[in-house]
Length: 507
Image 1 (cartoon, one colour):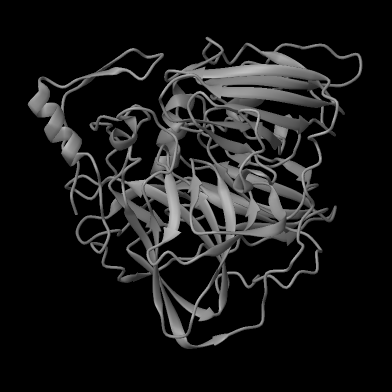
Image 2 (cartoon, one colour; image 1 turned 180 degrees about the horizontal axis):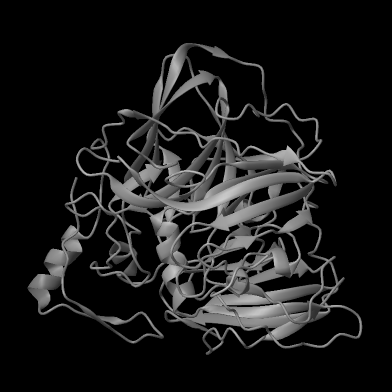
């Protein structure tokens, strides 16, 4: 497998595409030629795909479903030789899949067994700000946190991950992440047997040093942080999955720090997109490519024939960069992800229904407020960097707002908003492409395009504890490309943010 060559470099012009200084035209040409990573046909696919266990739960006296999550350190034998030092939840690496139903009250007992503070953010979840798990809910070493809320949103594939201010990338890279699946009572004959025809796939890149440890130094010429040269799915390098049903539902999560994936199969077969970040689409959309930026999720249904083999691949990016930045930031990479091996006989009991979820309904709503956001460089939204004690604005509970968001330079950015699922109502004044027509909480921002996002703020108010909005390229988020807002009830005004004290337990 070809590895990129590390070079000393400098990037000039933080607000624009930048100028690359590499010590001469010959060096530039060498690096440009060597910058593209291609693993097609080079991955052994010799390890069964690990399927994260479903988190165990109990019912407490109030009827809430209770989950225990222990954040801990450990080691994993990813490769021959020394085991890799890792972090995980209820295990050495990654965490269990949490599964609950719409309308259920869920309660968590989170304990931080690490020697530094961290947090657990429920990405994509509609919940009170005090339960959100952002940088204001950091759990101290040895501390406990007990969030509890009632799930009130459609069936969806969400995820959970750390969100400590300035350290999110490091904590995710060490292994803290897991899926959170919401079910509802919709009577649909979609594939739904977990780990059989309904398969979670947390796709992440990693770089290992010569001692088999995660190498988190950004020595490559990347404007978006670390890019690994090996791909793992659910913590498995070179994974294969044994297919026993004709239709298989894949819940794809881009759980990487900064890498784009343009998912498709090596043989170009079509598949059905059935869900985006916030849940099922009204009807499936057939395609053969789906590009996901970090934090985005989709659910797809793939059809297999008896006895065949197919490889899920990440192809070169369709869009997202200007100038040379695509190649230097992984946009030209072609990566084998997972091999699917169909049995000689396949069960055929499920289908893709003609109608599924409810369509987003905010395009015609009268917005109470319109706001504009421009992301530039590595750490600025509207010319400002994150300040934990600054609330940027307040929104009114019960109202709809439209936010126009733009990537103001040539770097890769995307945009995630806590608490809400939003509707992409237009891209540069045009109807969004089919892959963006469902509910979203994270969207890639192609440079210089204007994305109009409509969102409704409901249920939960707090003038002091904010939600976040930010770029989910984690190096950018950690550098300050993030802001804060509060949801206000009638007559409330913006309050004062409590100072985070990671020296004590939070509960």
